[in-house]
Amino acid sequence: MLLFIAVANVECYLYGRTAGYGYRPVDGGTLDRLADLVVTVFVSERSYPMFAILFGYGMAVMVRRMTARGAEPRRARGALARRGAWLIVFGVVHAALLWDGDILAVYGATCLVALSLVHRRRAVLLRWSVPSALVLTANHVINAIEQSKPWEREAGPDYLAGVLDRGVGHLLFAVEVVLVIPYIFLLVIGFLVARAGWLDRPQDHVATLRRVAVTAMVVNLVGGLPHALTVARLYEPPRPVGIALVIVHHLVGVFTGLGYLCLFALLAARLRRVGRSGVVAGVAAVGERSLTCYLLQSMVFAPLLSAWGFGLGARIGTAQAYAIGVAVWLATVLVAVGLARAGRRGPFEVLLRRLTYGRSGHSHPLRLKPRNISAQAVNMTASTEG
Image (tube, rainbow, N blue to C red; front, side, top):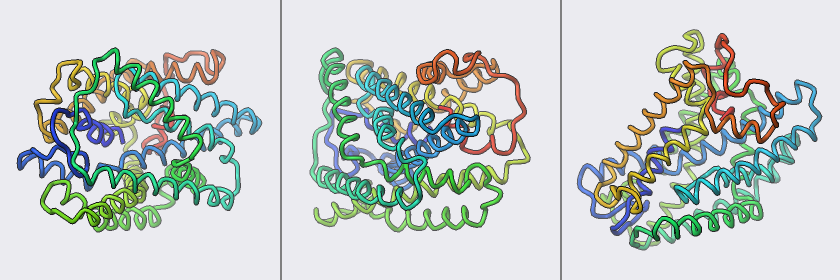
C-alpha cells in the first residue's frame, strides 16, 4: 500500500508545465507516456481506496481488541475519537509543513463520524453507505470536469506563505469531510471485511478472496484502461467522453482497491507457513510502522522536488518521478527493518499511541518484546498498528 502511495503521490510534486488528463504533464516523452499508462491503470486512484478500506478495517480491529480485553463500547469509541482527532492534527501539520495532499486528516475526520457505526448492524452500515457513495461520486464528477481542461502546474508560493495556505486549507477540508461524509462508504467496506475475517484468516476464505480479486482486476482493466490511454495521450477523446472516462476510472478504483487487499490476503495465505523472513519481514516491518514510513516519504519528496527546496520537480518527467517514488519507498523499508531489528516501534506510532491512550496505554512504548510471528502476522493486520 505504501509503495502505491509513494508512486501515486510523487508526480504531484512536478510543476512548471501544462497538465492534462490525470494531472500529468503533457510534454512528457515516450518513456513518460508508457509509465503514465501503467501507473494510471494499476496505481492512480487505487491507493487511496485501499488505504481507506484498510483504515476502516483497522478501526474495527482496534474496537474488537479493546472489547475482548473488557473495555466498554463507550471507552472504545472514546479511544477512536482521540485517535481521529490527533490524526487530524498530524495531517494538518503534515500538510502545512510539507505537502497539501495529506490523507491523515481526511481519514481522521472520517473516523470521528464513523466511530459511532463500528458496532452497528450491517443494515445500518449499508444505509449510511448510500449517501456517502453518492457524495463520493459527485466529487469524482467535479474532479473529472477539472481534469478535462488543460491547466498550468505552478510552483506555488514561497515556503512560509505556503505553510499558512496549506495548513488552513487542509483544516477546512477536514471540516468539510466531517460534514459531507464522502469516505464513510470506504470505511464501511473495511468494517465488513473485518467482520468477515478475510484478512485475519485468509486461508479460510481462499475461494472468496480469489473470486473478488480476479473480478476486480478484470473490471479494473475494462474500466481503467480507456482513461489510462487518454492520460498517456494515445487516445484523444471528445471532452464529454473524456469526462466520462475519468468518472469510470475513479469509481472502478474503489473495487480495485478492495481487489488488491484480497490479492495481498491470498499471498498471505500462501506464505503463512514461511513466517517472518526475507521480503515478508521487510514488508511487515513497514506495515507496523506505516505512519512513520508514510511521513518519511514526504520528508524526502517535499524538499527534493518542491520549488522551495531543490526544485527537482521542474526538471524531471513522470517516469523519473515514479523511479524516485520507488527508491524512497525502498529507503523506508530499510529504515523500518532497522527499527525492527533494534526492537523499536516507529516514532510517530509511539507518539500517536501515547496521545490516544496516555502513558498507561502500554508501559514500554519504544521497545517491542520479542515474539513469534504467526500466520496472521504476515497479512495486512500489521498496518493497522500504524
